[in-house]
Length: 180
Ligand code: PRP
Ligand code: MN
Ligand code: MG
Image (cartoon, rainbow, N blue to C red; front, top):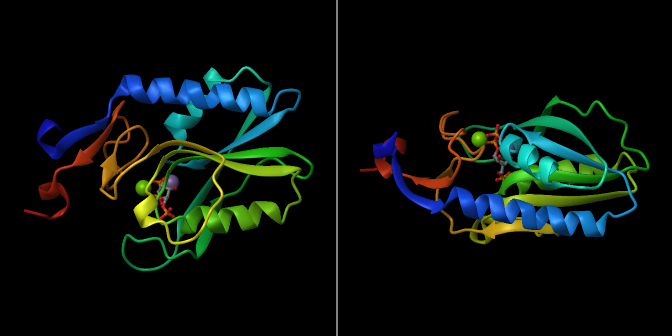
C-alpha cells in the first residue's frame, strides 16, 4: 500500500473540514426545504456518508449507479443506468453528490436525465474537480477542492476498485498503472 502511494494530496483533516464547510453552505441555502441528496455509486459513498451526517436540514438519501460505454478507461459520455433512483423526484429539490468531476461527461449526461423528470431544482456538490480535464461547461454549486490533472485515489476514488477506503486523497505512483 505505502509503495503504491506517490503522495498525500489532501489529508483527512482537510477533507473533513471541507465537508463540514460545504454542509454549512447547504444548510443555509436549503433552509426551510426538504432535500434529496443523490449519491453516484460507487465513488460518492464516502462524501455522501460524511456530508449527510454534517447536515442539519431534513434530508433523504438515494443512489444511482451509472456506467460509461466505450472501450478504455475514459468516459465516453454515453451512459448506461445500472441502478436508478428509488425516489420519484418530480417537484423535489435534488442535490447530486459526486466524489470527482473529471471530464464532466458522466455528470453532464446525468443532469439532463434528472432534469427530464421535472424536479423543483437540481444542483451539484462535488468533493473534487479537475478544471484542466473538463470537457463540457458545467455549473457546479458546491466544489470542495480544485485539483491538478493527476490520477487520484482514496475517500471513495478507486484505481481498479482498490484504494477507495483510504481516509485521505492521494496520488498513485506511476508504477502501479504501468508507468516507470
Ligand atoms: C468516476 C467518478 C465520477 C466519474 C467522473 O466514476 O467517481 O463518477 O468517474 O468522470 P467524468 O467526469 O470524466 O465523467 P467511475 O466511472 O470510475 O465509477 P466509480 O464511481 O464506481 O468508481
Ligand atoms: Mn463515480
Ligand atoms: Mg472509478
